[in-house]
Image (cartoon, rainbow, N blue to C red; front, side, top):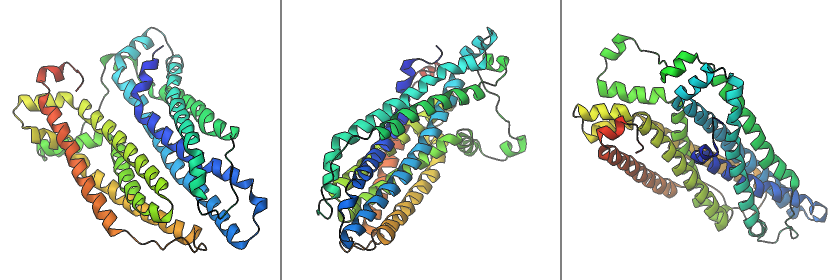
Length: 381
């Protein structure tokens, strides 16, 4: 087997993201299904309005959150597969030289689907653990008859079993496509990179060119870093408003998911950036470049992307809450008006700047403490 079970645990990001997606979807979809059971007991206009709002909220949260996290899981899975192939080119080249077909080699990549199974199962189990409390909070004003928690097998199939099978199939197909590389190129162990014209290189200072090429060569990491800061901005700011618009439980849940997604995704992305530039960092140290110059050349190119992600996350949470208040809950008197929360924005922005710069500083310290010999031997940071 080319890909082993131990490789699954390197896909921590996918496990966590898929767990968060299924956790949110299971809570709201299970509640929506059980809510249908009391539809015949609704006998007043106010109850009907609240019932319709609850159904619409469940659909909106499941679609937006689940869809966004599903897209991220797909992108991250494809990134992991490409990264695995790039770091095992010689081994894969030997197998192809021995007569193994692309499909036979790619067949072992189905194991990556197990990471989705672990994540979806974790999210599903956690959702059922807090589901009674969630049902109670959703109807804490007793505007509707009591909603009883029921096990829904269809959600187990649709949110746990099917995604695992689909991702396993996607892993095999994508890896088969990525293995369409000549054997000799695989055996050389390095991919052939497009070379920019001499004029464009010579006209640009080395550190500036290195910073731009670092971002350009790892385009998928641009998405992950933007997604991490998007999650932080959107979820943290949204949690400030949830106490009034929904409940303290909802605020804590949104805040926790946002922090987990942001830090896990950012950690994996920045770690990959540093590891993929280890030899470049070694040569920079040999030629006397300082720690700050190394950090700026390798990491500073992503700062603008991080702040763009933060800005998009801020706009997203504002638009989402506006839609929720003025479209879904417009006929419910108990729901307060929503305006952009400037204090929440300032607190989130300041905390983001501090945390992001501390993370960058921590990585620059890690870079400076690694010996040139250690980097050249490709050891772990």
